[in-house]
Length: 452
Ligand SMILES: Nc1ncnc2c1ncn2[C@@H]1O[C@H](COP(=O)(O)OP(=O)(O)OP(=O)(O)O)[C@@H](O)[C@H]1O
Image (cartoon, rainbow, N blue to C red; front, top):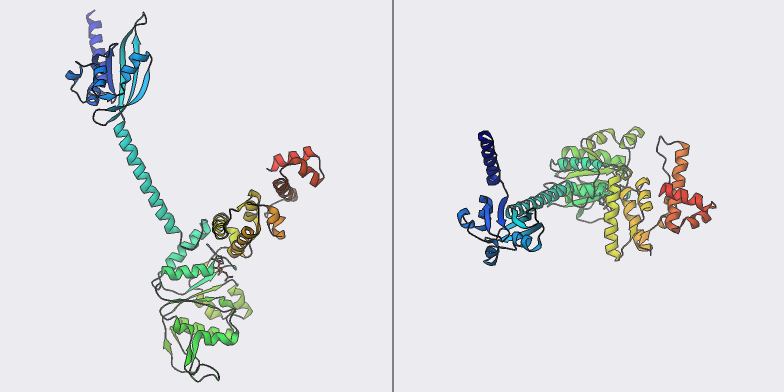
């Protein structure tokens, strides 16, 4: 008996501890809402001492505005458990769950309520939201950092290239940009200038392929007065002199006539040059960025490009990968060009999934320029809001680019897939596809299920 009593006391003590140290407020009332028992947390929600609270009735406290609405009062009215959010006297929000306790005869004898302070959770939520905002801001900044203005890119390949661009931009060395036509060499050259200490100084472009050979020398190096009949009597400044302090972009450097290549090498090495018709050397401070889509090494072997100039230019080469190797860039460039041209022409043109898929597997020999021009053309000429396969240039409509390890059945499968998806896009029904391809409707429908 004595042992049982001790055990009971021990258990009671443990329950008291649990009751007292709970993070939740726990409150017990009778069926008239008189408070019978409550823990510290519950008393503090009401802004009362425990002793005071034990003399109170919840209905009265509710009427006096200590909290509203009261879960206990609602349970007494309705006879079943309730969960609500209460506003407390000191502006605190509380999540309250209350339930009735019945005796064996089905009479409500007690109501027990559990309350949890939401104010802190709300404050924490606000903190989390603020942190999320900060994180997003940070992410935007990072994104901005890895993206350079004017250069749209998302691919790993371009990330590497842009990393090199950033590094080289600030060290003031001459740069050689390599890459197929239309990959963005001119854009990158501008970016290098923009990111360099020379950004406030002029940026000049000379295209060695478009200037007649007879003019290039004069354009680059200028001449002194009286040199040419019909020429300017005061002479003409060459671009090296004009661009002094700034950056000179020599596009299509592979086309520079061989007799001028030695002079260019001299300028690059000595940072000096001599205008045509004079013996005086002028000092210049020009950063030269050259670009070519030619294989300069091959030109050296063929004897059309000087080896020494090639080595001088090739100290800091940056290669811009072809668009076909930058699938993520195809996606993002397509999206951005569509956006731009839709805005310009006030249209809402979108591409069908098949067209997009074709873009991803197309060779893009003209690279970003070709993509940009094609999208502009499509936005202008297509009346429908969705660009379909038949709107593409003919050579793009039937492309299949078998990967190196594809077998003949796989290639044929690919062709079939292209035709079925394209036709289904156009016709929208398996019956029409069957009719056009001269196959049964069930065969057409099977293939549509297989490929789409
Ligand atoms: N990453 C890019 N983001 C946005 N536009 C780009 C990008 N790359 C290229 N372009 C655009 O594509 C077109 C061709 O680019 P750019 O003239 O720089 O190519 P290029 O390599 O210098 O060509 P070429 O060798 O024929 O001179 C331009 O309209 C340019 O603005």
